[in-house]
Amino acid sequence: MYKTQKRKTKKIKVRNVAIGGDSPISIQSMTKTDTRNISATAQQIEKLAEGGCEIIRIAIPDMQSCEAFKEIRNQSDIPLVADIHFDYRLAIKAAEFGADKIRINPGNIGSHQRIKKIVDACRMAQIPIRIGVNAGSLEKDILKKYHHPCAEAMVESALKHIAMIEEMEFEELIISLKSSNVLTTIKAYRLLAEKVDYPFHIGISEAGAGTTGVIKSVAGLAILLWEGIGDTVRVSLTGDPIQEVKVAISLLRSLNLREQGAELISCPTCARCHVDLLKIIEDVEEEISKIKYPIKIAIMGCEVNGPGEAREADIGYAAGKGGGLIFRKGEVIKKIAHQNAADELMHQTKELIKSLNKK
Ligand code: SF4
Image: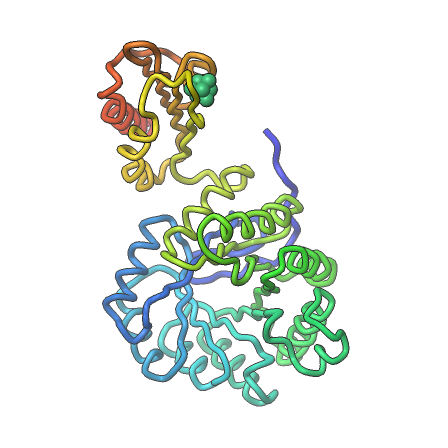
């Protein structure tokens, strides 16, 4: 089994989830509701947690959102990160109200004294800070020096903030260097990885929506992860945040970095396909997305590659003429009619998980 060598980093705890060190790469997302709408935000948090998200960030743009955050905090046990820009008082309040991590870009917080107040609040609450450097909001002096928001500029900004907070004797830090340019992001993380051992939160900022956003995110994140860079991941997509979590789970599983949930293998179909494969997949997709157990399910259209893939999966279906074969752990266990494929696949999957859980 291929496996990458993870960069050695400090371990930082965010509530009950460890980031860095020997911990698994954790999956993050962000709520997209109006934080002041407590019930909508709490519902989205619940949905994200059910979908496999492990750390959830919430934007706190004003004091009303901060008050709402306090209530939202009380309704959930999942690690919550308060995302703060500009106003240091919001960060202090969020730490008081039970945030498990504060995300700031020190560059837009203002004076040294204000940043110190945030650091002291986090020290008191015993929570870490993520220094989130974004290519779109670099300090003026750094931009003047480099002329444009390049990787070197982002790293210089991060190092400046890290040094400042270290001087305040605070080292519970997680760093991110985000840009909407994939290659700039990769270069920035590579450069910073040579200089510090803090864990990295990785992501491609403003990646976009749909297929384009997924490809852009995965192109950048996969390269970094394969180089051992990245301790927690957020896929940033315009749209339902649950898609971000699905993509992140799938990405980490593809690189053998996490075993989480069901992996669906299906062929693209062609003229040889004996069955409406897409319909079978649509019928099982929702139930499969709820599975937390690491399991591989193959759904294949004909006898060319079908039996081979179905045999390699934990549960498989290989369509043939007039019916198909159900495989369980490499063995054919029955022949069924195509119209029963979805039900039978789910039944066998649940049975297998039950039997594996008993062991
Ligand atoms: Fe076509 Fe069969 Fe391959 Fe599916 S498994 S793509 S149906 S040849």
